[in-house]
Amino acid sequence: MTELDADVCAELDARLAVTDVLLSRGYPGEPAERQPVHTVYVAADHVRSDLVERWGAAALDALDRNPPLPFGKDLRDRVEAKLHREPIEDLRIDFEDGYGVRDDAEEDAAVAAAAEALPDTPFVGIRIKSLEQATRHRAVRTLDAFLSGCDGKPPPGFVVTLPKVSAPAQVEAMVVLCGRLEDAYALPPGSLRFEVQIETPPAVLAADGTVPIAQMIHAAEGRCVGLHYGTYDYSAAIGIAAPHQSLDHPAADHAKAVMQVAAAGTGVRLSDGSTNVVPVGDADAVHAAWRLHTRLVRRSLERGFYQGWDLHPAQLPTRYAATYAFFREGAPAALSRLEAYRRRRATGVLDEPATARALARYLMRGLDCGALDADEVAPTRAELAVL
Image 1 (tube, rainbow, N blue to C red):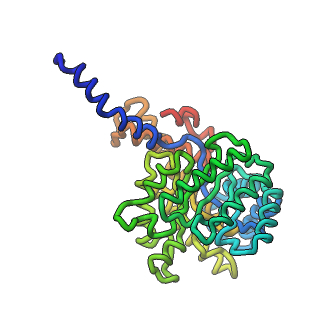
Image 2: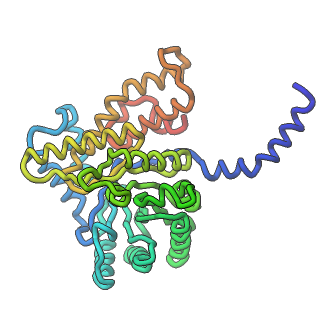
Image 3: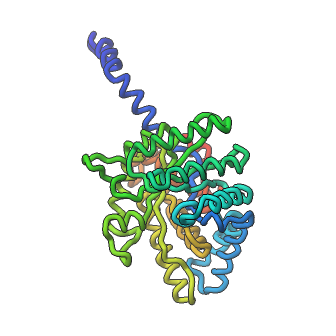
């Protein structure tokens, strides 16, 4: 070592102090908490207190009415147990496209009814209308009224979905709105969180050539917890013909790749969109929709999108079956590689610390969604979380 080392280090620390803070705040890493495997969107006027039970029963009925199973028998017990126990992980009460434009009195009544009939799910929230000029005041009114209907105490896991975001300024405005509502209802600062829907071309590429998605995340001041891809709004906006609008269109992959890079390391999670081909009609139509849904769910998982939208009860069996198969098939190799890494044992794969953390997160996700049982995974989830 030279005598300059201490002076050089001090100079570098001073030069990079601001950068160190920005990186620490802006890129805190992947959250250890559970992420739902899907978000179920239900129009606000269809929400009843027994909605979860009705969706679970409808999903099981679809399996009974349309044999053979759309997945292997080895998954049947696990999937059916999930449909009995927790058919919906994340519920989003929709006051936007799925609900439509109503007069104020009708929407106010729907808000009050939905808040009163709030079903019991691990994660829940509402999708308000956008903060574009035409719907801005209605969006504010709906969110305010919903919080009032909850006596100013939103349920655990509550999140607001902000649709059709095109510019960071709209995210900044949402931060202001959340702060004002927290003050009005005496909520802890920062407790109101939201997710941003990426469904407009200006969100992916601005007029000046910049990438607004990345700016949106940091403009949210820690309140943004998710980026959700809007399949059909985005596809239509860039001119893709209706028959070809899909989660696996190359244009969709491009938008989602930008989302993925922008969100990496920020703690903001990703959700793929939906397929509008739902399992209804005769058995052939149901099975065709199940095959499509299974393929798309698996495809999303393989590309690092661990959450997606479901729009119909009969999509739940294939959501869980495809998700469970993804984690169960990969678990033995993940466990073996992680054990070799922890014990510094030489194998045919030399994993880096970042890959070891990815293996741990993979196993945590499998445990969280019910694909894996605790006795099938060692180390424990708590130990995995700190790797």
